[in-house]
Image (tube, rainbow, N blue to C red):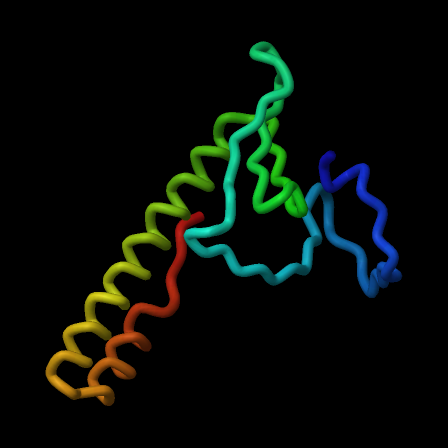
Amino acid sequence: MSVRNTLSTDPVIVTSRTAGDDLALFASGAVDALVAMTLHQRAPDDDAVSILFGKERVTLEFYDVESLERLRDLADEGARRLGAAIEANARASATGDDAVAADRSGELVGGGVR
């Protein structure tokens, strides 16, 4: 099963159109260490690979190498930032300085990989 052949019981409301080939997707999700993530390719010579999250409730399909490489770079940057924030908060908690932890976490927000 993939997202494209799963019907939703909720209405889908489109409020605007996107320009060109831009992707319009509005979603929010949380992934933790217990959520399964699986790389799937239907056949060894298939032109697409998918990343399945959870019990295939969310599927990201990729048809070119460059998109997967961009996702990898973004995930690397996200892991670096999250690790730095966790480390800064742990140091602040160890010293009892929660105000410093809040200030440091604000420094890590922003920027991005494109």
